[in-house]
Image (cartoon, rainbow, N blue to C red; front, side, top):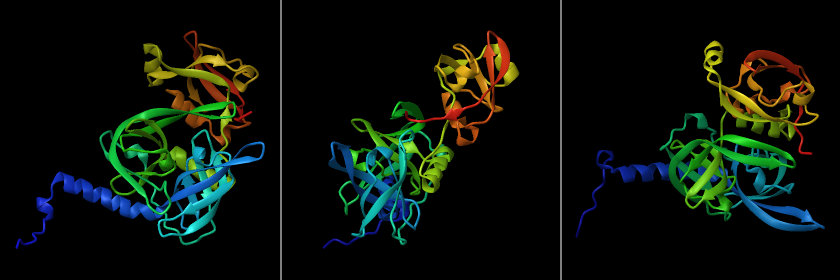
Length: 323
């Protein structure tokens, strides 16, 4: 009869170590990941059932998910791994970041620890934890395939690009939307939001920008953004200007929206924006990040280059709406 031999950590294979990390992340996060079932209005009084996953972020009942999971709904039911089913209400949704926050009255939930996606590296191990079926969680593992991807979003007529989206090869399915993407320490670094293709998934990153959005959704029910009314893209600066400004690129205006703050301030196509409110602008993501609610309704200095000359023009941003 054979004897059982224990394998020491020194003898552990890379596959054993990989499995141990994934198992520990799943054990740590599964109590914090819920299944969501919501009812959506689709017109003429009809409703359809839908759902996905969510992540508990506070012990007193706040749950983070994807905005598209709860679109058209004001609440539903959250199923926990311990068998409880709790009523949840949507307290805030921001389709332009694809994030939403729900609330349940329970005060004894297990919150996940939020991390920082800015620390991720391509090739790093990540674990996707969802709860598409209720009491049995779904766990898949993979690596960060790419960083800096973009995800187009829409709310009514308003459009925005979610920057720095995480691409991973951890297999996802629609029921995992709103679930957690975690690093090897079990910290949530992203919210799974879409299936990009066979074997590929995307996640909205948890970083300083999304933390602000989540905080506003929890306290105010919405996230306000400033709007100046341009379409543009990154363009390299001429060498002389790049040397004097200390940066390599700015945002070239391709189109100015009629009757917008930019139009009223006489910004023009081919103007190259290099700073807003004293903050440098090297790309569209910089410009979007600066369009915060504190700029709404107050004079803002826009530094730009027009026909080789540096100008500063003041404009007053409006609030971005979906109408």
